[in-house]
Length: 277
Image: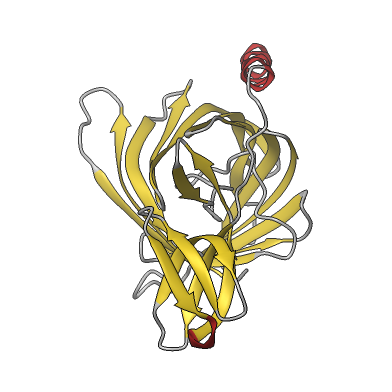
């Protein structure tokens, strides 16, 4: 409980010092030829629109050549527009305090063998699920992960659980239950979580602390670090890498290394997610 109290006080103290982040309208102009330009519409008349691109170049585009206009969510910080990451509801594996959003659906694959689907039921509740696809295995794993969350200004909080089992196992499975809080600053976000493992409907002695960092590295990319610290004999893990994303597709690349006695090696992490909305 002491660790949980520190997490809450830490999040509230940062929240109290931070103004609400404001979004700026940014658009993608798609031409009939398939070309596209991203930027702000400065002016328009009956024949043309004037667009200021991300490189501060002003372009006049005839309306007869335009197929459609698409709004791009994001925020302008220090004269640079940073696109919104639709997958900011999770780090690599752990959930942040944020929501995927009502009606939003994403499909992804992690480490080649682990496809998953996440569905936003409301702005306050979502559920994820997936299976393993190990070649030549007669039995596969599956998991279900419900999530409840709440956001106020730049502070988000979530209650998370993930349940694992195999299709052939008739006994109770195992999993994790944890709380996460995320605070957004202008160019970075900090996530802190705390939880415990459970097995066959009973909590185990495996307790863990999650510390995550996301730092905006470019218009559509960010640095990510997700770190798990355990108070038991289970190894702790640290990770670092980056995410690059568009309005529909997101790629995660990183390295994970355990912290346990003399163990010292890196496990590559690769994940891709497609957002339907």
